[in-house]
Length: 454
Ligand code: ADP
View 1: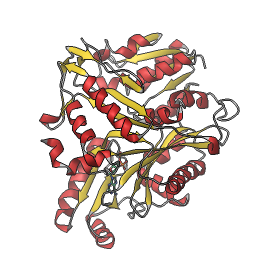
View 2 (view 1 turned 135 degrees about the vertical axis):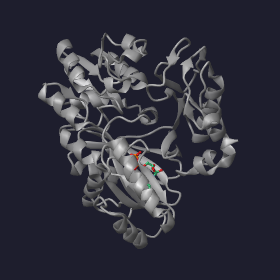
View 3 (view 1 turned 90 degrees about the vertical axis):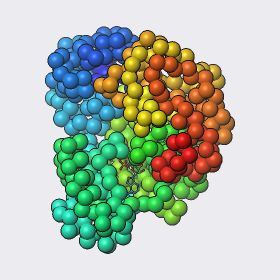
View 4 (view 1 turned 180 degrees about the horizontal axis):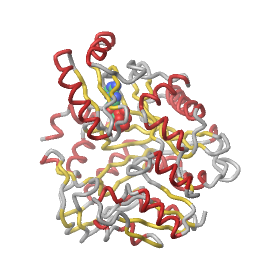
């Protein structure tokens, strides 16, 4: 591969450009009009406006324009990053038809994992435990009601095509069922274009543990251990760390092996993440994210394996072991502890509504064991309302989880950002909370902990 088009923006576009640069691969950026000052535009070797006349987000979803730029510039491959077209079958197919490598899994694999009900069925076939629930989408309220009686309340209604923590509703008891069912259906239709729902037992206080997997085109599948992404707000990840500090070695091995088995079952290719909810007694598959994830950083910090470069090499046909010279699975080790905080321009004092405006002052932290992956984070940049509110990912690595927490607190204190509100103050409260420090935070820790919001 000599040239890669990056079909994304913000921090992940910059991250991919950096990976290409190290691999001596030329880069092509595409940008929406609203991103004309976007850093990714200037970091890439070439940059082209796409989606002229369209809404900002739609520009990055403009398959025809993106393929056109790729062909015009002679790009060998397209990296979709995360979000936008990363899990879009039609896009992967269009790349294939245009003779351009899609840096990700196959169209068929995107198809399976894009539908959470289908994914659960495959996981069951691979011998993984799934959360008690429906094997097929539900078709009526009375069916849901019967299922709820069978599993016992609370239950969760989930959109089959859902993602990003959206399209989920907890139903605590029968009195809430009808209204939540109707609301979940219409929300799913609006957000994901399909009102297909499925039902799961709602697990009480689980941890969200996910396994990073790399799989080449020669049948090799390896895991890079797990991440704990339990610290969430309304089902969306806020702080992630690796490794988990509550899994024992046996449970870790079981979960990581289950992830590898699942990916082998579908002949998976490229990087992917297998997500689980973990309780004291068992661990349950929830979904596969067939792409690079926002939190891949912490895995890189404890394994020293560059996941984005690995994606590119795998897409280029390299063998994990003979070409990429990665350690065999049983020789792979991790070191220390890494934490990531997603610094966003959300205002905790205003129900986390995204703030916008010009960044007047921007001083970033640095030093030993600190990694920053920024989008358009600099003094003078304008934060627009058009895209997601992620400003910079702050990551630290240290010998122990405790040391990493201390380092992250120092990092957050060192940030000086004025002109636009951020969630840094809120993050500091989370990092100082004894439950977080103990590593015991479960998925509703933030939502249940009133003092974090005072
Ligand atoms: P998305 O694809 O939208 O991120 P997931 O299925 O990965 O959705 O779930 C996101 C989060 O929602 C999980 O990490 C967990 O906190 C919560 N969640 C999902 N399903 C359940 C469930 N059955 N019981 C309890 N919590 C759940």
